[in-house]
Length: 151
Image 1 (cartoon, one colour):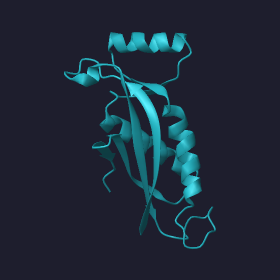
Image 2 (cartoon, rainbow, N blue to C red):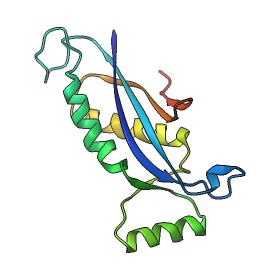
Image 3 (cartoon, rainbow, N blue to C red):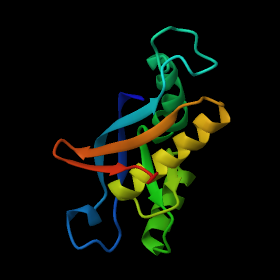
Image 4 (cartoon, rainbow, N blue to C red):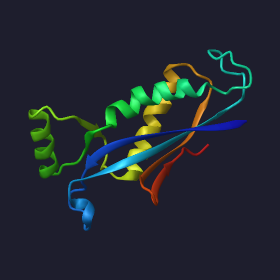
């Protein structure tokens, strides 16, 4: 088994309603995203390059389309019942600002889980015989959340 990792960056704004700290205010992050994939070399039917699990450019294309292009320079909205968050989203949409919704509060922990599940689903649809082993979302240079599924 071999593991490879591809790294990405994107900028996102959000806030955490009712948080008892600075993150209750609208703010932004330059997220660093690391996507780790594992599998067996030369076992992926769609890739013919000897010695590769998968070409890094293929990972880049999938992650860019599924995650980076949707998150980058968007306002991240969580699926909460918070009235203020709903009003902010309505205002942004009414004024043609880019938003992206996840089905959870917009914490780094939930963002990492959301990205993992989206990419797992996409790689399965592509019928690529590799596994996403983990996703790490760096919210700042010193703080990150890591999501991986138990085997």
